[in-house]
Image 1: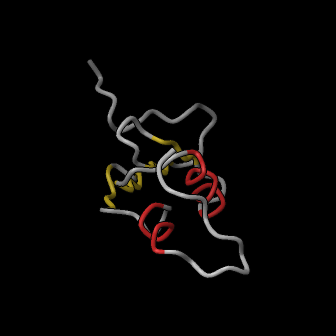
Image 2: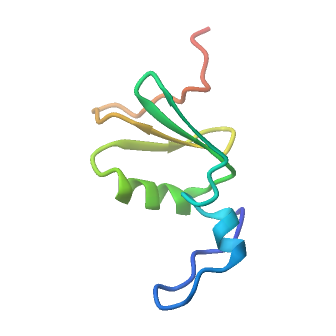
Length: 85
């Protein structure tokens, strides 16, 4: 699991949390075919935060550790990293 947990709500942020947790640790953000792509080294804890930030959208952790925010839908989102081959 990369990085520490976020500090409790009453505690100040730490440098480690700032550099490890979404969204402050985003290295780059792109918009590709209507999907937000946040490049970084994230985990399931960051997915939970992104789902609260973008309610109704489908959020996934891709194979590179980035976060993808897809439009709402009934099927599981397919990562931008997956090829059509």
